[in-house]
Each structure stands twice: as C-alpha cells, then as structure tokens.
Length: 256
Image (cartoon, rainbow, N blue to C red; front, side, top):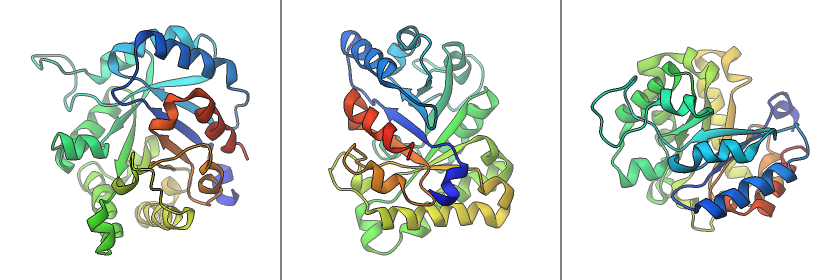
C-alpha cells in the first residue's frame, strides 16, 4: 500500500434500510466471530433502531459502531423524528455518515445541510464520514473532479481545513452505487489522489493521515485491487456489508 500503509484502513458497512432483528443479530455475531486481525478497523452502521442491540451483539469484538445519518442541529429540542449526535454517542457510536448520495438525491440534502451535519457530528463527539461523488452524466461530461472538489470545498469554506484532522472522506461515484458497476482501481485512485491533494493544498500535515474510502459496489471479489491503490484507505460498503462472509473477505483484503 506504500503511502496508505501509514493509514490504518477502515472498512465500513452501511446497512441502509435493511435487516430485521434476527438477521441483524446473526450478521453481527458472525462478524464478531470472524474478525481476526487489527490491521484494519471494522465499522458497522446499522439502522437507528438496531444500534443499541448491535452494541450488545458485538460484545468484546473489535467492531466500531456508527450511524447512517444525524440531525443537522446540536442538542435536544422540538425536532420530531430526528436523532441527535449526542443520542448516537450515548449508544456507543463513534462515527456517522454525512452527505451520502442517497441523502443528497432522495432527500434533497444540499451542501449547506451536509456541512451543518458535519459540524453537528463533530460538536457532539462523532467522527463524520463525508460522502462525495458524481453522477453518470457528470462523469461523462468530464466534471468528476470539479463536482467532488466542490463538495469537499464546501466544508473547508464554512468550517476550515482543521476539521479534517478528525474526519473521514468517502468517494462514492453515484453511478456505481448498487448498480454492480465499479470505478476501475485506476479511476478511483485518480479521484482519491485529487481529494488528498486538495486537502494538502490547505494543510499537508492534515492530508497525510486522512483516510479516504471508496464506496461503489465494493465486494470481496474487487476489494483487493481497489485497496492496493496508494490513496484508497478502505471502503464504504453497501450491499456486501449485509453478507458476513463477503464483508469479512473485504476486511481481510484491507490487511494486505
């Protein structure tokens, strides 16, 4: 992994709106039995309603907990249906995903909302995983770097570069999420390198250890090739994170 060898890979499972109590328990317990090294960090992000139970099922295994979203405000109050970062911390969460492409496209979250959630996450003691990525039309128009850079720059402009000392970025080409299509390792590396260079332009000391994950149809069969790239420091895994054997295979590839 050359440069990436200095960064401990993070393999994060985004369960999205999937699972049942029984299925979730079986999945977590199989992961807890199968995790066999500490060369990488394993993270699971279940639906809100299963987070507390997942903490029980993890037991003493080295699996971190995260959430898929949080309220864009801090503290408590009259926000019916919302979940605060403080509540998530209370349940043992360490990470939270912000700006996932499904939140941006299905629920209209723009950069202002994503930045507010990023800020709220850090203010409430969580590490945000900032998702950025382009759609198929944007890629075909050659706009990938401009779109991704703008999404990262939105955070820097409002919160400053220092916030990335306690954050993770996930590059997820929207055209590769749940479609079975995957960016080639070279395509993904190119964008990851651009993101790191953008951060380094502001602060090279923050850019060097920053973990940048790839998300977009990551599975056991392609994980090793993706994770061998210099600036790919792990994966934000969707569908394959619901299959313990496949997720463990991805995790195993991160140790190479």
